[in-house]
Length: 212
Image (cartoon, rainbow, N blue to C red):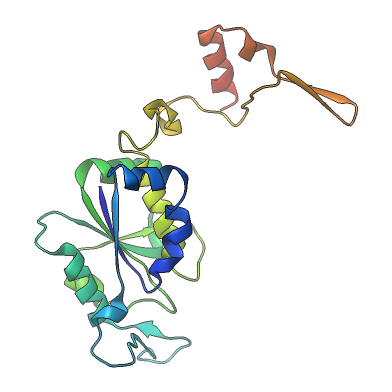
């Protein structure tokens, strides 16, 4: 899987992608991530990409052409790519959506907005899909992009150490426990439910379903 991220702030991804499962997935060549900064595709010497909006209004809007050039660079000669345009008004991002994208595409372009957004003509140049990670507004698209990389990457075999760890593929519950079986805190004992110590898989799964 190859993620192509269009963003003004590529360094915002460093810490999350440099830890744990995603770091290992990158090192094992399960996923690849490249960044395309629209500032690298402008002709003015100040590398400015934001301008006041036509029609008035607060804030600044990212120009279309630098973003278009960045997307075109990411597309290159590829014949099949998925272009996701992050928007709080877009289709709701879910595990099901992530699974479908992971099956159909090897190259995913995620366009991260900033400020008041990106000139709408970008969506007329390319076939994009507007996607939202929730009914709220963030400062920029970098956090949603990281979230999408995480969720989509988990769908790929080999990214998780054990594919059975994919919660959406099994019965899962937030009632989880580990050793010790009993511990005390401020004079009160806290125990693991007896059913989890029984070794009876069917009854354990039934217990999880009731508490899922």
